[in-house]
Structures are given as structure tokens and as C-alpha cells.
Length: 170
Image 1 (cartoon, rainbow, N blue to C red):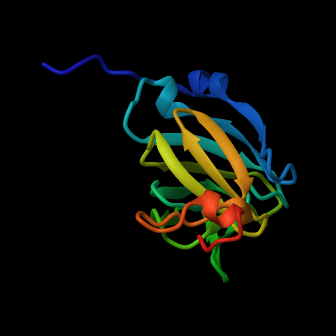
Image 2 (cartoon, rainbow, N blue to C red):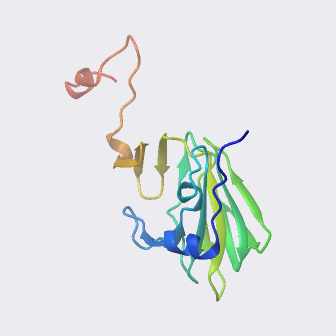
């Protein structure tokens, strides 16, 4: 016997939607409906995302631990993967592997770009936002950002951060 089925209908999905502006780059934003969490899904994430014409949903970024994907339901856009740009429209699918190239999605059309976006739903991840110079630690739903240049390499058995701050090599 299997567990209960959690079914969401259009009205339920619409009820989970919220406007989102990215805290590191408020010029990026979308309307998100976190369908998978609302339906009780624990492993993985699926969101219905609407990006207005001319907008980019999220800053150009790279996940170190999370695979992400995109499936276009309606509209036209552009997926940027590092320096390459790919036109996308209804039926297009893109995968952004953990530790892979940085990526972003922009609406290049005249109507909303409507997508399913998701990922592996890791509870912890490191996210680089290279053009803004930030690294984000995501843990248990909390996000903490620091300037990328604030990070220092730590080598087991080598010099410590205290040594580096005192003028040694870290």
C-alpha cells in the first residue's frame, strides 16, 4: 500500500504564488508558485514560474550541490549558460548540473514566460553569483550571502585564517 496522493489543481497552485524580487539583485524577479512543497513533496522541487516581458527571473548563478532544470510551458525567452545564449519557447527543456556552468533565464518575448523550474531540493547548497561577486550558503531554508572575495582557502595542516590575517599565507 502506498501513502496518500497529494493532488493540486489550478486554483490550489495559484494560491501558493507570490511575487519574488531577488535580494542580491532586485532587477531580477518573477512570480513563483512552489507546487511541490505545497503538495507535500520532500525530495526535489517543482515550481511554476512566471517571468514578465524583459525580466530575468534570477541573477546569473551556479549551484555547487543542486541540479536545476527548466521546462517552458508558454512564451519565449533566452537561457544563458556561461557565455552561450539559447533561445527557448514552448516545449524547451534545459538542465543546469550541480557544479556546472552559471546560468540565467530571461523573458525576451512580449507575453509572460511561463515555466516549470525545479531541482534536486537539497537542504544545503553553495551558490555563486559571479557577476555580483557573492557566494551564498543555503541551509535549511535560510540563505546567507558574503562577498566572494571574503572567502579564503583553508588547507588542512596548512596555515590558518588567523595566520593569513597576521600576514601569513593561507
